[in-house]
Length: 479
Image 1 (cartoon, helix red, strand yellow):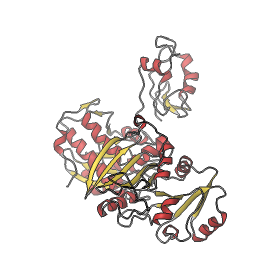
Image 2: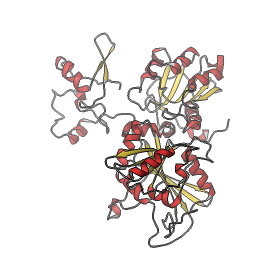
Image 3: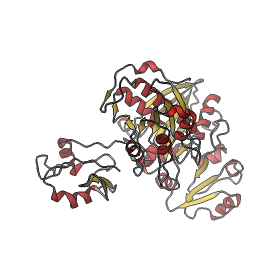
């Protein structure tokens, strides 16, 4: 089995919070959890709006007996495919899942497949990013007697975190979408060594190499949609297909305030893939009718801006958007806070030109100290070009943190850490407001019989139950 990572990287001991089977190799755990993440990525672009799921089944001796991943919407779950491949050798084996199964709406196929196959242990890379599903499958598996270890919770160390990050990366679109309420958005551009995306004349064919352009087709194939602005349509007349990437064909979206667009354009040809044009209300009604006659969907916004557009496509279920626009729209998208990651293809060419366009327009910054720093920057040589990628926004943390008393006081000085009447969990929080008293998320808390009861919020539970309790509470809730 060919893997893209080295087993030798996992020789360091792993510190665990939970007791596991004797003499179990945690290096093996990390190897196979990475393998689960690797195979899950094969379906990128096809499973949207669902996550990328992968499952590897291995015996106690370390032999892989079955693998599976979710191919596309409506296909068998990864766990079902893996146990079918493993057959009777699933009994007593360990299942490695890059992400907690997303069984919902009464469908427990993934969990049932593992239980009925005789799996005795499951290693899970990350919990499900969606609040209403997070922890459900893990609790279901544990209730059936399986030992479930979650990276970063039951297994902890630096190399465990590296394996966990591999699981995060294959489902970044869903993770960002769940936390920011907009689709995961990637800004892609190709530029010369002197920072130009075209000559002063507007000519831009081709800045990057064929190898780099093939990588762009792959990026398109992983995306739900591609966005360009009116300038790109007028100057480049793009097709915006993934014709060489082997992936699915993303929807094409054009953002134009004025609808000053040509009647003849490749994007109006819907023989391969659909096109949506978003514009400002009232713009060129006659041209809207022309586009409608071609089958192009036209959407009007009272005020056209990237944030509102992304919130709209979030509500339509889009997970990931690839922005291939010019500098003006790119700057607007960055300023609106909707761009999460950047892919910059830098070609070893110099074109010059005082008026030659750059990849990002005016952001209103006047000092270098205001520049936006990328996070987790990667460099990759693709033929003669250099691909530089990085995040403009950090990967959301799926595990809420509870601050210390000192941290709580720093956040809200009106709360004294020495005020004994304050229940301990009163000011728990995370960067997105989860677990605070003012969070809209429901919680589940144990009742007198040990069963879990659902409360609409922490504040609700606090107001109803806490006055009758004389000691601080240990908050254990599931959202």
